[in-house]
Image (cartoon, rainbow, N blue to C red; front, side):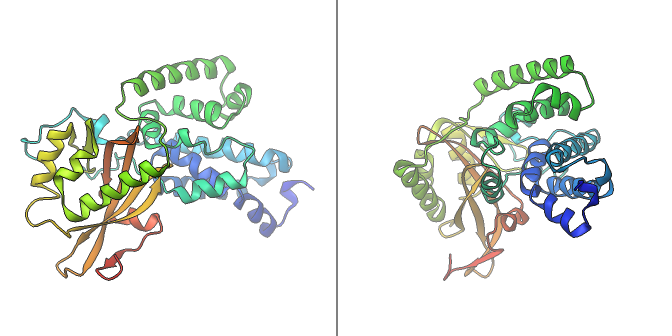
Length: 334
């Protein structure tokens, strides 16, 4: 039976099996969870409206990827590349005034691991959510590419579509795909080398001990303990504040006058989670009712050889709920 002959219930049930992996793909292209939501929804709506163009079940998945990719590329024509403070401007000095937040939609967002695991289980035979291709370091570098190069790289090197398939997806030629892929790979390789992050980390006892010490340092506002966990050239940022800081001493000076200033013991609570295949925390700040902690954002930690090389706190309380974490904590449950 042709796909176009299915009733709506059967059709929706079939395309829903691809929702999670399409969401991961759209996130990689867009750099935003909300944007990925919108792109996937538009893809599934378009699939229903144009179902007569889908020949059979075997062509459904590539057809969906083609539609999703082109919807994302159309949207990206009207939007700036997303970034993190590290790729937005030069490092700041801790003695400088902290700049105003930039609340335009220019910041990358972290991605919760739950959809990654679900998509991986759904199609284990495909390289859909390889861990090295979802880390925040990879996404940051990926979003320094022009959108079309970004799409070619994802379709070829992450999703393993053939060059001819990618050319068909993007309505272009095989030489054009090869050229875009070569440029994208070259840029990716060069910027990974100059990055202060690694694309892999070990989930072992040493890492677990480091992360436990990290939580304790934040919750007790122990600046010395926090700084000892950092690489000498670690980086620290808190978008939508555009500034970022490099090095233990700069980070020490910054946190001493901001997040750990004054009587800060008990000011923060951290709930472990995972983002982009790496350690992360739901960050909660103490409210005027000192027994209640409100969602503050998601903090993503990058480790290299068991030492923390980068801390990014995405200061958006709504992200906490996207990670399946509570909106607030009480003193008794935190």
